[in-house]
Amino acid sequence: MTCIIVEDEPLAQERLKSYVEKTDGLQLLLIADNGKDALDFLNKNRTDLIFLDINMPELSGLDIIEKNNPAAEIIITTAYDEFAVKGFELNVTDYLLKPFSFERFLQGVEKARLSILSKAKQNEKPFLFVKTEYRLEKIYFKDLWYIEGMRDYRKLITSSKPIMTLQTFRDFEKQVPPDILCRVHKSYMVSVDQIDSIEKNEISIHGKRIPISETYKEHFFRIISNHQK
Image 1 (cartoon, rainbow, N blue to C red):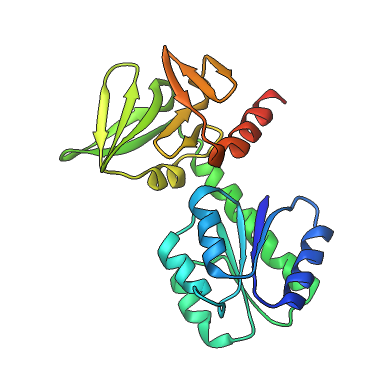
Image 2: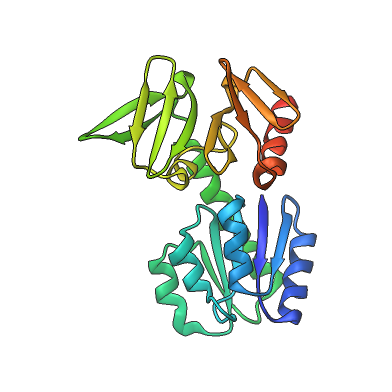
């Protein structure tokens, strides 16, 4: 699981970092000491798990959840127990009250792992439903080529027809695993199985050239690398 730490106290940062490094199966992507940097990262990148403090400068942990609504599992780490009810109302995975032991940390990580496995099992279905006009349209992944952003709309290009929807890229990121449908640009998501070729910073899908932006480049090529294994 990839993870980030959002914590403004240096000692708490170091403790969490050491816990992550001692835990098999966790990869640390970022340590942010304020809510704004964390939100900027989450607006451009995906992660499986967030260790999130509540009281921080500029944006609180709860602000991050409410503004970004991340698809990641969230483990709140705080010295204040009065936020527990609000945290669980926002569907956090676990709530660790400082100071917490490594064993308690591992319990939270295991909850996150089981939740991710459960969601992955649900996502084994080969299709998604898309809101278009006044109906929900069923689209099989094998028929979806790519999604293009067009101002307020997203245009889904399929093997049979284009479909317009007001659903956001973030909506699709929450519905579909990135190894199936991957964001590669602020205006594009691509169906990984439909890619014909990749040359430098450009993807070719059924004759369409789609740019890979610097923001999504590292994440995209990590997905492609996993497909090669």
